[in-house]
Amino acid sequence: MTAQYSDSRLTNLIAEGTGEILKGVRGVGLLRGRELGEAGDELAQSWISRVLSQHRPDDGFLSEEAADNQDRLSKDRVWIVDPLDGTKEFATGRQDWAVHVALVEDGVPTHAAVGLPDLGVVFKSSDVRHVSGPFAGKVAMSRNRPPAVAKHVAQALGFEVQPVGSAGAKAMHVLLGDYDAYVHAGGQYEWDQAAPVGVALAAGLHASRLDGTPLRYNNTDTYIPDIVICRPELADDILEAAARYHDEHGTFEGVAK
Image 1 (cartoon, rainbow, N blue to C red):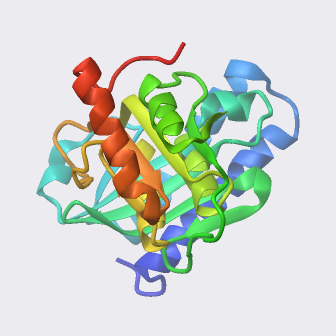
Image 2: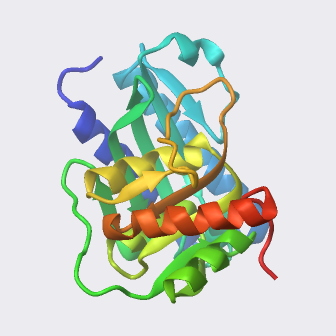
Protein backbone atom coordinates (compact mmCIF):
# COMPACT_ATOMS: atom_id res chain seq x y z
CA MET A 1 0.00 0.00 0.00
CA THR A 2 1.40 3.39 -0.95
CA ALA A 3 1.09 5.87 1.86
CA GLN A 4 0.85 8.98 -0.29
CA TYR A 5 -2.77 8.29 -1.27
CA SER A 6 -5.53 7.74 1.25
CA ASP A 7 -8.29 5.32 0.28
CA SER A 8 -10.62 8.25 -0.31
CA ARG A 9 -8.16 10.13 -2.51
CA LEU A 10 -7.26 7.03 -4.49
CA THR A 11 -10.93 6.21 -5.11
CA ASN A 12 -11.59 9.69 -6.42
CA LEU A 13 -8.47 9.82 -8.59
CA ILE A 14 -9.26 6.47 -10.21
CA ALA A 15 -12.75 7.67 -11.12
CA GLU A 16 -11.42 10.95 -12.50
CA GLY A 17 -8.60 9.32 -14.47
CA THR A 18 -10.83 6.66 -15.95
CA GLY A 19 -13.26 9.30 -17.15
CA GLU A 20 -10.44 11.20 -18.87
CA ILE A 21 -9.22 8.03 -20.58
CA LEU A 22 -12.68 7.23 -21.88
CA LYS A 23 -13.33 10.75 -23.13
CA GLY A 24 -10.00 10.64 -24.95
CA VAL A 25 -10.80 7.30 -26.60
CA ARG A 26 -14.09 8.64 -27.88
CA GLY A 27 -13.06 12.22 -28.57
CA VAL A 28 -10.61 11.57 -31.39
CA GLY A 29 -13.38 9.96 -33.46
CA LEU A 30 -11.38 7.06 -34.93
CA LEU A 31 -13.70 4.34 -33.61
CA ARG A 32 -17.45 3.96 -33.69
CA GLY A 33 -20.13 1.69 -32.32
CA ARG A 34 -19.15 -1.67 -30.93
CA GLU A 35 -15.42 -1.20 -31.55
CA LEU A 36 -15.50 2.06 -29.61
CA GLY A 37 -17.31 0.46 -26.67
CA GLU A 38 -14.92 -2.49 -26.53
CA ALA A 39 -11.87 -0.24 -26.71
CA GLY A 40 -13.21 1.90 -23.89
CA ASP A 41 -13.90 -1.13 -21.69
CA GLU A 42 -10.47 -2.66 -22.31
CA LEU A 43 -8.35 0.45 -21.88
CA ALA A 44 -10.15 1.65 -18.78
CA GLN A 45 -9.96 -1.80 -17.19
CA SER A 46 -6.24 -2.12 -17.92
CA TRP A 47 -5.45 1.26 -16.37
CA ILE A 48 -7.50 0.66 -13.21
CA SER A 49 -5.97 -2.78 -12.75
CA ARG A 50 -2.44 -1.38 -13.01
CA VAL A 51 -3.19 1.44 -10.57
CA LEU A 52 -4.58 -0.88 -7.94
CA SER A 53 -1.78 -3.41 -8.44
CA GLN A 54 0.70 -0.64 -7.66
CA HIS A 55 -1.13 1.18 -4.88
CA ARG A 56 -3.25 -1.54 -3.20
CA PRO A 57 -1.63 -4.87 -4.14
CA ASP A 58 -3.00 -6.75 -1.12
CA ASP A 59 -6.67 -5.83 -1.64
CA GLY A 60 -9.23 -7.93 -3.49
CA PHE A 61 -10.63 -6.88 -6.84
CA LEU A 62 -13.91 -7.40 -8.70
CA SER A 63 -14.70 -5.84 -12.07
CA GLU A 64 -17.16 -6.39 -14.88
CA GLU A 65 -14.26 -6.41 -17.32
CA ALA A 66 -11.98 -8.93 -15.55
CA ALA A 67 -12.15 -12.62 -14.66
CA ASP A 68 -13.40 -13.07 -11.12
CA ASN A 69 -10.55 -14.05 -8.82
CA GLN A 70 -12.38 -15.56 -5.87
CA ASP A 71 -9.42 -14.95 -3.60
CA ARG A 72 -11.34 -11.73 -2.97
CA LEU A 73 -13.73 -13.69 -0.75
CA SER A 74 -11.02 -14.06 1.88
CA LYS A 75 -10.24 -10.33 1.83
CA ASP A 76 -11.72 -7.73 4.18
CA ARG A 77 -11.04 -5.01 1.57
CA VAL A 78 -12.20 -5.40 -2.02
CA TRP A 79 -12.28 -2.88 -4.85
CA ILE A 80 -15.45 -3.27 -6.91
CA VAL A 81 -15.41 -1.34 -10.18
CA ASP A 82 -17.22 -0.93 -13.45
CA PRO A 83 -14.76 0.92 -15.69
CA LEU A 84 -17.54 1.85 -18.12
CA ASP A 85 -21.12 1.51 -16.93
CA GLY A 86 -23.33 2.09 -19.93
CA THR A 87 -21.11 0.92 -22.78
CA LYS A 88 -23.95 1.26 -25.28
CA GLU A 89 -24.62 4.85 -24.23
CA PHE A 90 -20.90 5.68 -24.40
CA ALA A 91 -20.52 4.12 -27.85
CA THR A 92 -23.55 5.92 -29.30
CA GLY A 93 -22.60 9.39 -28.08
CA ARG A 94 -25.06 9.68 -25.22
CA GLN A 95 -24.15 11.35 -21.92
CA ASP A 96 -25.78 8.89 -19.50
CA TRP A 97 -22.81 6.57 -18.96
CA ALA A 98 -20.66 6.41 -15.86
CA VAL A 99 -17.50 5.22 -14.13
CA HIS A 100 -17.95 3.24 -10.88
CA VAL A 101 -15.21 2.82 -8.25
CA ALA A 102 -15.86 1.51 -4.74
CA LEU A 103 -13.78 0.17 -1.89
CA VAL A 104 -15.89 -2.35 0.00
CA GLU A 105 -14.88 -3.35 3.52
CA ASP A 106 -16.66 -6.26 5.20
CA GLY A 107 -19.43 -6.05 2.60
CA VAL A 108 -20.09 -2.31 2.88
CA PRO A 109 -18.86 0.46 0.52
CA THR A 110 -16.67 2.71 2.66
CA HIS A 111 -15.26 4.86 -0.15
CA ALA A 112 -17.00 5.33 -3.48
CA ALA A 113 -16.96 7.56 -6.53
CA VAL A 114 -19.24 7.75 -9.56
CA GLY A 115 -18.02 9.77 -12.50
CA LEU A 116 -20.32 11.21 -15.15
CA PRO A 117 -17.49 12.26 -17.49
CA ASP A 118 -19.60 13.95 -20.16
CA LEU A 119 -21.03 16.20 -17.45
CA GLY A 120 -17.54 16.87 -16.07
CA VAL A 121 -18.34 15.72 -12.54
CA VAL A 122 -17.31 12.98 -10.13
CA PHE A 123 -19.63 12.33 -7.18
CA LYS A 124 -17.56 11.33 -4.16
CA SER A 125 -18.70 9.68 -0.95
CA SER A 126 -16.12 11.82 0.85
CA ASP A 127 -17.98 15.03 0.00
CA VAL A 128 -21.57 14.69 -1.11
CA ARG A 129 -25.15 15.34 -0.06
CA HIS A 130 -28.43 14.95 -1.87
CA VAL A 131 -30.70 17.73 -3.06
CA SER A 132 -33.79 18.18 -0.93
CA GLY A 133 -36.80 20.41 -1.42
CA PRO A 134 -39.80 19.82 -3.70
CA PHE A 135 -40.17 16.43 -5.39
CA ALA A 136 -39.44 16.17 -9.09
CA GLY A 137 -42.34 13.73 -9.47
CA LYS A 138 -40.21 11.28 -11.46
CA VAL A 139 -38.89 7.74 -11.03
CA ALA A 140 -35.83 6.71 -13.05
CA MET A 141 -35.78 3.24 -14.57
CA SER A 142 -33.79 1.20 -17.05
CA ARG A 143 -33.91 2.31 -20.66
CA ASN A 144 -33.07 -1.15 -22.01
CA ARG A 145 -35.10 -3.31 -19.61
CA PRO A 146 -37.82 -1.13 -18.08
CA PRO A 147 -39.22 -3.02 -15.05
CA ALA A 148 -42.97 -3.13 -14.53
CA VAL A 149 -42.50 -2.66 -10.79
CA ALA A 150 -40.99 0.78 -11.43
CA LYS A 151 -44.15 1.85 -13.25
CA HIS A 152 -46.26 0.41 -10.42
CA VAL A 153 -44.27 2.36 -7.83
CA ALA A 154 -44.47 5.57 -9.84
CA GLN A 155 -48.24 5.24 -10.23
CA ALA A 156 -48.63 4.61 -6.50
CA LEU A 157 -46.73 7.83 -5.79
CA GLY A 158 -48.51 9.80 -8.50
CA PHE A 159 -45.19 10.22 -10.34
CA GLU A 160 -44.07 9.55 -13.90
CA VAL A 161 -41.30 7.23 -15.04
CA GLN A 162 -38.23 8.30 -16.96
CA PRO A 163 -35.92 5.86 -18.81
CA VAL A 164 -32.21 6.64 -18.28
CA GLY A 165 -29.00 4.86 -19.30
CA SER A 166 -26.43 3.56 -16.82
CA ALA A 167 -27.18 2.62 -13.22
CA GLY A 168 -24.68 5.21 -12.03
CA ALA A 169 -26.35 7.96 -14.05
CA LYS A 170 -29.78 7.06 -12.67
CA ALA A 171 -28.56 7.03 -9.08
CA MET A 172 -26.67 10.31 -9.36
CA HIS A 173 -29.63 12.08 -10.92
CA VAL A 174 -31.64 11.07 -7.85
CA LEU A 175 -28.91 12.67 -5.76
CA LEU A 176 -29.16 15.81 -7.91
CA GLY A 177 -32.93 15.95 -7.45
CA ASP A 178 -33.74 15.39 -11.12
CA TYR A 179 -35.58 12.20 -10.08
CA ASP A 180 -36.95 11.17 -6.70
CA ALA A 181 -36.13 7.48 -6.97
CA TYR A 182 -34.40 4.86 -9.04
CA VAL A 183 -36.20 1.52 -9.10
CA HIS A 184 -34.81 -1.55 -10.80
CA ALA A 185 -35.70 -5.23 -11.05
CA GLY A 186 -34.52 -7.82 -13.52
CA GLY A 187 -30.99 -8.20 -12.26
CA GLN A 188 -27.70 -6.42 -11.89
CA TYR A 189 -24.24 -7.30 -10.62
CA GLU A 190 -22.24 -5.94 -7.73
CA TRP A 191 -20.17 -3.67 -10.00
CA ASP A 192 -23.39 -2.02 -11.19
CA GLN A 193 -24.34 -1.09 -7.64
CA ALA A 194 -21.46 -0.82 -5.18
CA ALA A 195 -20.20 2.65 -6.14
CA PRO A 196 -23.62 4.28 -6.73
CA VAL A 197 -24.90 2.82 -3.46
CA GLY A 198 -21.80 3.99 -1.58
CA VAL A 199 -22.22 7.53 -2.86
CA ALA A 200 -26.01 7.52 -2.36
CA LEU A 201 -25.77 6.37 1.25
CA ALA A 202 -23.06 8.90 2.01
CA ALA A 203 -25.34 11.59 0.57
CA GLY A 204 -28.18 10.61 2.89
CA LEU A 205 -30.32 8.76 0.35
CA HIS A 206 -32.03 5.43 1.02
CA ALA A 207 -30.63 2.36 -0.77
CA SER A 208 -31.78 -1.24 -0.37
CA ARG A 209 -33.29 -4.24 -2.11
CA LEU A 210 -36.93 -3.79 -3.09
CA ASP A 211 -37.98 -5.86 -0.07
CA GLY A 212 -36.01 -3.55 2.21
CA THR A 213 -33.07 -5.93 2.69
CA PRO A 214 -29.75 -4.10 3.14
CA LEU A 215 -27.30 -4.36 0.25
CA ARG A 216 -24.07 -6.29 0.90
CA TYR A 217 -21.18 -6.79 -1.49
CA ASN A 218 -18.26 -9.16 -2.14
CA ASN A 219 -20.44 -12.26 -2.29
CA THR A 220 -19.68 -15.55 -3.99
CA ASP A 221 -22.58 -14.93 -6.36
CA THR A 222 -22.29 -11.35 -7.57
CA TYR A 223 -25.83 -11.21 -9.02
CA ILE A 224 -28.33 -8.91 -7.26
CA PRO A 225 -31.95 -9.08 -8.49
CA ASP A 226 -33.22 -5.59 -7.62
CA ILE A 227 -32.55 -2.24 -6.00
CA VAL A 228 -34.13 1.02 -4.96
CA ILE A 229 -32.29 4.28 -4.38
CA CYS A 230 -34.54 7.14 -3.33
CA ARG A 231 -35.16 10.22 -1.27
CA PRO A 232 -35.29 9.00 2.35
CA GLU A 233 -38.74 10.44 2.98
CA LEU A 234 -40.14 8.28 0.15
CA ALA A 235 -38.54 5.00 1.19
CA ASP A 236 -41.45 3.60 3.22
CA ASP A 237 -44.02 4.43 0.52
CA ILE A 238 -41.86 2.93 -2.22
CA LEU A 239 -41.17 -0.28 -0.30
CA GLU A 240 -44.89 -0.65 0.49
CA ALA A 241 -45.81 -0.16 -3.18
CA ALA A 242 -43.16 -2.67 -4.23
CA ALA A 243 -44.49 -5.17 -1.67
CA ARG A 244 -48.01 -4.82 -3.11
CA TYR A 245 -46.63 -5.47 -6.59
CA HIS A 246 -44.85 -8.57 -5.30
CA ASP A 247 -47.99 -9.81 -3.53
CA GLU A 248 -49.94 -9.47 -6.77
CA HIS A 249 -47.36 -10.96 -9.15
CA GLY A 250 -45.31 -13.21 -6.89
CA THR A 251 -42.11 -11.55 -8.07
CA PHE A 252 -40.47 -8.18 -8.66
CA GLU A 253 -39.57 -9.32 -12.19
CA GLY A 254 -41.43 -8.34 -15.34
CA VAL A 255 -40.77 -5.86 -18.12
CA ALA A 256 -43.02 -2.84 -18.50
CA LYS A 257 -45.21 -2.73 -21.59
